[in-house]
Image 1 (cartoon, each protein chain N blue to C red):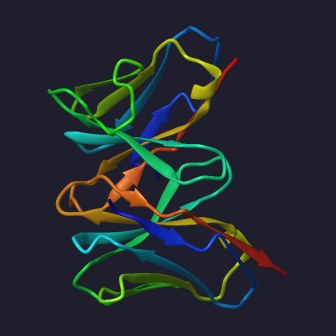
Image 2: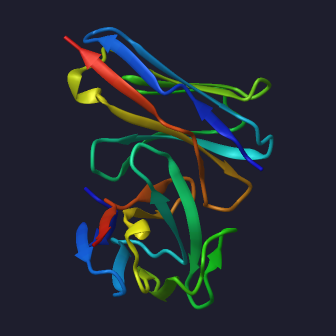
Image 3: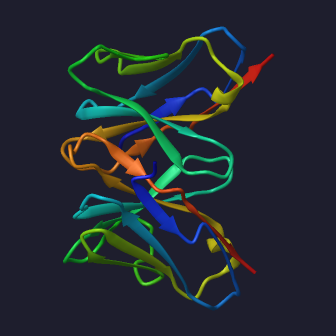
Length: 111
Length: 115
């Protein structure tokens, strides 16, 4: 079955860039997503990338996809304290809209 | 603003009772919605796919008689936890694909505590 892995924790200083990494195993992935979850809250869709793209930029967010290595990353530029949350990557296989989630990375932003 | 809304956001029920959670798509129709469960500090696990006008599709290991799903209209899916037990206490969250089909939105989630 599909497997999506993330590192559990990342700590960065305010103003620095954060890079959150994700690896997946399903070669039939069509879209890959990044979601943000604050404590006790639902999931906020940050961005997504189609599997035939290798980069997507949206304001402070940059997504890089290495399809050969099945590696996805999310870079947050100028990280702010409000970016502190858990970040989930998720992969979508085929045309179905169900997602397989990674383990989540807790981002801690320090002053 | 939210495009998928869940209600209630928090609910406490007694063991043995049933509780219903609603998931609504706002300003768009969703023939398919998804229900996930999240234990504290863990990832989301897909429970079932809710299909408008037909039976839900359950993931392996999910009891369909315990977690009843009804997709009553193109904007509403409900999850009913029947005969709830304390081990059913969890965060339940639904999702729906947006009109483009590429975006997948999640609700705010519902905290269920069974006492």
